[in-house]
Amino acid sequence: MHALDVAGLSKTYGEGPKAVPAIAELTFTVDPGEFLCIVGPSGCGKTTLLNAIAGFHGISAGRIDLDGEMLCGPGRPQATPGADRVVVFQNGALFPWKTTLQNICFGPLMQGRESRRAIEDRARAMMADAGLSGTEPAYPGQLSSGTRRRVEIVRALMNDPKVLLFDEPYRALDSLTRSVMHEALLQVWYRNRVTIFFITHDLEEAVFLGHRLVVMTARPCRPKRILEVDIPHPRDYGVLTSPRFRALMAEAGTVVHDEAVRSFAAGDVER
Image 1 (cartoon, rainbow, N blue to C red):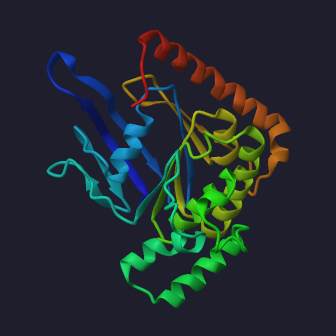
Image 2 (cartoon, rainbow, N blue to C red):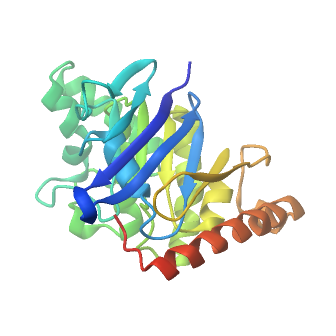
C-alpha cells in the first residue's frame, strides 16, 4: 500500500473555449516514509497538485488515495482538509502574536486529545531535536527566516501527519541559509520518517533531499521522468561534489530545461 496514490488525476480551470487544463491524467505513487521531490517549470501545475492533495480545491477527474483511503475521486471531487496532511507554505503561516512554543502547540491544543502539559513536553522535546531550544518565549518577528522555517516544520510534525506537504518552503532564503536548512530538514526527517511531498524549483535542492525526483511536463502537468536518487542516506553537503550527484544533476537538468523552454514558449504563469 502506498502512502499517496494519485491515479488519472485531471484538473481544469474554467469551462468551454476558455478552459485551462492544469493537470491531465496524472498518475504516480509515494511510498510510506519516502521523501519525494517534484520539480517542473513555472505554471506546470505543481501547486495545483499539492492543493488537491491538501483539500484546498477540487479535481476534475481521477482520484487521490491516502493510505488506501480515498481523499477525493468519483462522487467526492474535493478532499476534506485534515491534520493527516499538513502544508508548509512558501510565505510562512506562524501567528505573529504567539510565541514559538504557543505556535508549535496550537494544533494539538485545538484537537484536545492531550493535556497542555503533555503537549508542551512533547513540543519542547521536538524543538530540542530541531535545534530550537531557547526560542520558546520568542515571537516570530524576533527570529531569523531560517529559524521560522524550522518552527513551522516542528509545528507541522506536532500534528502527527501522515504526509507533510512542502510548497517551495525555502524559496525566499539566501543560498547559504538554504543549505543549512536542507541539512536541518533531513535531520528532522531522520528522526520522524514522515512521508514528504516536496515541491521546488531548485534542482540541486531536489536531488540533495529526495529519494526520487519527479520532473513534471509543462502544462498540463504529468510526469516527464521519474529519477531514482541512488545516493545513500544519511546525506550531508559533501555529496554535492560526488560524481553521482553531478551525473544526476546533469540528467535531470536536461529534462527540466526542455520543459522550461516549452513553458516559456507557451507563456504559462504559475497556478
